[in-house]
Image 1 (tube, helix red, strand yellow):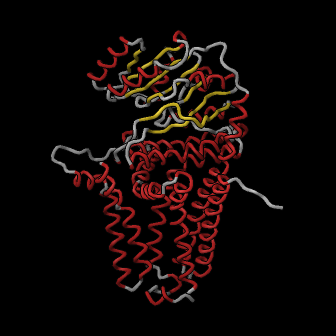
Image 2 (cartoon, rainbow, N blue to C red; image 1 turned 180 degrees about the vertical axis):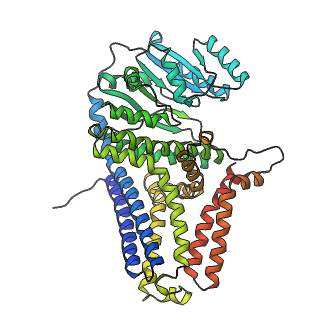
Image 3 (cartoon, one colour; image 1 turned 30 degrees about the vertical axis):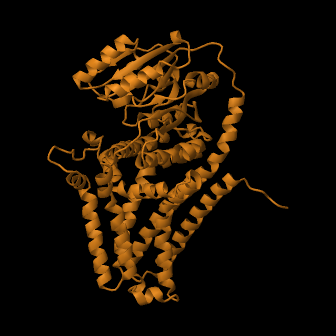
Length: 517
């Protein structure tokens, strides 16, 4: 009997196989490392290596499984969509746009575009939620709102951040549904409400999220678009099959009555993830629609990406503690798959950043621990019978290849190896930044909820600005380069090359600040 496999699902199965093979290689090396350790010091290193391999293996295999499983979401959502009927009765909708010291021209342009939504005009109320501290921006937006029939709400403090602004709006809103858009999102499909509100005939549906993308602009911004596309193309559909689709903060619709029953948006820096979790705990449904209705302003500067990633990881780290606290008291309301989904979401960026740094530091200790009492020289490298050295290459390279895997997947699915390699580089360049955000969250440093890097002043040049904001990464890279030179001096060529490679990856933070600002 001959079995035929769809090309796309074949590619997804291949990705799962790649991660399984890489994880298996890492585990084989870790086991050999433990077995051959000749001292307590090396045994402890071996145990650490095994622990990190297990952590990376879990995340990599789970992510690749999500990638594979997302293939089946198309059929799932098509079955739901096929049963939809056009709206006969039009519920009232609040269109909410939170802003904070944003460029008024973007706000006004996108607010006016939202007025083009195809929906009975008497059923929509537009809200501009302005937390701006700049008086000139506030004045301009207030006048604009008055002239265009938009309800302008201003707060004198930023308590609760975006969540606080939305919760404040709830006190003044009587509409049945709330559609949220970011200030920089431009509607490209005006059927947003007409297409999506019919899904809410399911009385258990709490919220609905659409796919978010950025406008095309440059190689860097398009790469960031793919950076996020991995989540919306693969992770989000797989989660939606488990009823754990994440509300992504905008380009989505919420049922107001359920939001109120939950107690409004939890007032954290990433309120959307916390709200999604609370909705699930309360027994409500969620849905992800893999269709783009609006495009955001492209991220053209590395500094913008750093600020975004700092906020994400600060919030995700807060969510980890929140998850364990709330799930402990709601054991019956969360399935095992739901727990894994939320746990991996909270730990996701921490895994990529902190585990990278731990593997790097462990590599230094391994290189100078003279594994199995041998020094790996050029002669060793050319000696194919040296099974110990071969296993070290397999073990340490397995982890590196598992991180390079996004580049492979980007090539297979998005047809761009170059952008995939950039994504691989970005994970190293952001490692320290994400880790510092996680530490700030753990220590509850509220003043550090946003990235507090050095701003460029009038006397700074791009080199100075880049160096100031990547001092930790540059210092770490210099240390790695020094260790690489020492390893080369004692004829440990493989260790020297490995540490040199790590040093180049981490110093990329400086070059990305320098090239992309």
